[in-house]
Image 1 (cartoon, rainbow, N blue to C red):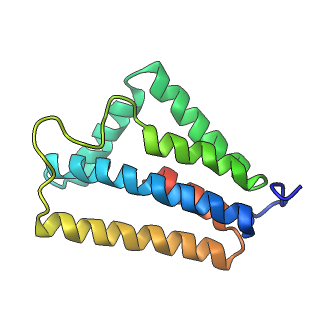
Image 2 (cartoon, helix red, strand yellow):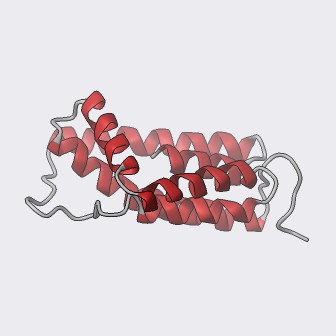
Length: 146
């Protein structure tokens, strides 16, 4: 079975499907959390508190967190489990949409800088995992960290 690769998270074709899905999910999450960062005036502490509130605000979000963490834990042995985490990252937290309700995202210099730094860190994490032969695991962890 190609999906089960043993410890490491894999770097074969199945792993790259997971990397692609996690990358797409991370971009969706990035749009959501960059908007939050802008609304919270780029204060890291405020964005973290906001995220914790949203992820804990409903039973559905709590279940999504458990599914995302389980997908991360299992993706070290079964890379396809990372797809569960990608789905959670793309959809959650429920109730917090990608597009804002009050004002559109303003592409300020500060926002663009934050987005580039965030993207570089995400790519570096996945690249490091790929070099170590753990591409799916690294992409899943990076997506969940987003």
